[in-house]
Image 1 (cartoon, rainbow, N blue to C red):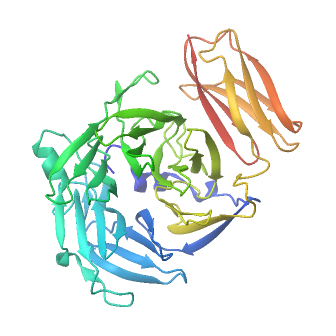
Image 2 (cartoon, rainbow, N blue to C red):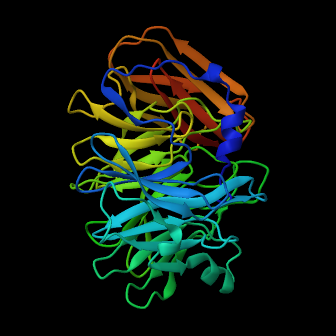
Length: 435
């Protein structure tokens, strides 16, 4: 994906020593398959199969495979567009596959290489599991999204996720054009439903604006769509959001104060599941075990769904329709299935919930409200934008239930700060402003 992050570079700068053994009591993690590098998106079909794309090495060697419920992998497509973008220093190619009846659709990112920046359709009417994989040259149709957008004046394009309407229209989230695109299901005509404005950067000295970067889109049962964004450099925590987008392209807020969202899914009750790619420290290195999934109810109320399932980054999510979820693991090149031992879906009963800070903007003091489920240490730290600690307090032993901590901030200079609440099983952060 352009303008956002470089996965290979990130993996190189993180050492094995940062990968601790982590056990969570309320969730079970099953490795569906290992040694699958370059997987970005995951699609779960009605028969319990997983459809995964691997971007390849950059030599038009991208692949698409199906993983059956018994965990066997069957190649479906080979020779998908894949190239190394030296400007972005990453491999561009197939991001995600979608099975629609007997039609298999693949969304391919990038734009400067033949076949990329497109929505590609394959006809699987005469293919079944166990058959030889199909060569890319046998594609039934290729819709060149990026070429069309660039011709219309867009500087960049990177088609990333897509949903379909019942009439066959495809609605595409383009992560580099910062736009939602509509492809007419009958004519293949491309129109722009909405282009997101860049975000004014009031958090760091540079750059002046931060790219919106839409990365996930799902259909809203009440009409229209939910769209999430990653936000580009410098990856400010709490700046990502989910919005509602109607069929005419109008946007209304839905959920805010989220971080680096890379994908969405939605369940039968209309609850939205937002995947957090991860999080970066002040030197832009990934923070270990910072990926998480947030569940947002139709009313917009968020809660932690699952955390700490991958050492570094995760970009693909697919619900299993039984209360569990599939995710990809960039660090270990794995697909994981997460299920729960209770019906609460709480990550860990030692976790903290609903940390809130008042007032914000800050004045002379703030009150930190949080809740704990057991007696264990809680570390609360206040950082400025350079990553320096301006306040830190370790509470060796907390009482069960709701807690309130008062912190003096009258000596702080005006600016943006982040307060972090860390326990033995979770890390939560809130952005604060001092006027």
